[in-house]
Amino acid sequence: MDLEEHRKLGDLLLTLKQYGPAVREFETLLALNTPDKATAYYKLAESSFGQGNRQAARTNVMKALEIAPSYEPAQELLLKIVR
Image (tube, rainbow, N blue to C red; front, side, top):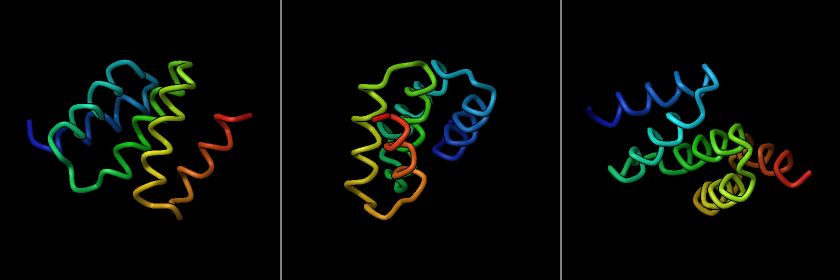
């Protein structure tokens, strides 16, 4: 699979609330050195949050915000995580 296929599959799994498999796809995307790391970290965080893993979600959303501090979806997710 190429980067785009992993991204699409991860997005589909996230939409279907299949959080475990989505985590694996976004981790794979990052391991393959995707150029859009901020979005991949954000979606990894969103998937982790869906699994109830707040610590992993927080870690990954912070990585997304380090890359793109004004990324609004990541900012909003961080607020949900810390509540």
